[in-house]
Amino acid sequence: MKLKHLSTSVKVIDDLCGGGLLANAVNTIYGDPSTAKTSLAMTIAFSAIEQEKDNDSKVVVIDTESGWSDSRVQKAAETRKIPLHLLPERLKRYSATMFGEQHKMIMEVIPTDLKENDWELGLIVVDSLVSFYHAQLLSAPTAVLASKSRELQGKLSLEINSLLKLATGYEAPVLLVTWTKSSASKSFGERERKGLLEDLGKGLLVNDLECGLGSRQF
Image (cartoon, rainbow, N blue to C red):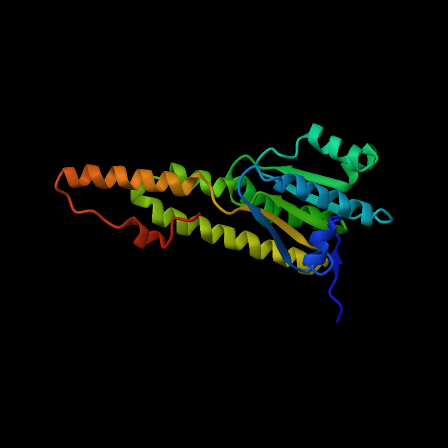
């Protein structure tokens, strides 16, 4: 059985991936902040539009970092000579400003829109999957950090499973953008050291936060 791929239009990536992004699957781009992950995701999105120009398939984008602004999308489209009048019809952008919105979009809104509008699906992009996850962990009190982490990880797992279901149901690739690291790890370490020193200065027993989290590499 020959696997179906979506060309990224970047030869080295297509060669490494056996032809491009694998359909019926969740594919991931990851890297440090400010390493052109969004630019690459945008390149792949427009490549999908070009490859499916003879039908009306949609590229669905969930933008959680305000990286897919109108001006940036239009400039990228013009660079690839894609007519701007096609964008509203072919590129469906959803903007999330908090974790709850992201979760609802992935679990409810997008599956419903695909079904009710009878859209053909060419590609789903989530850029990025984890920005709100990191933000919520950074704002969580140390005392509940481990439980908050488990709660959010559970929701992320549900989102990935929902996206995989869409990928297999529509025989289309899903592309997740994520990070290898963020300021979360450093912030947790600094917060923990400060808290430990304060508690030790009071003669209190202290807990090893890392035992509860398993790892600080978020």
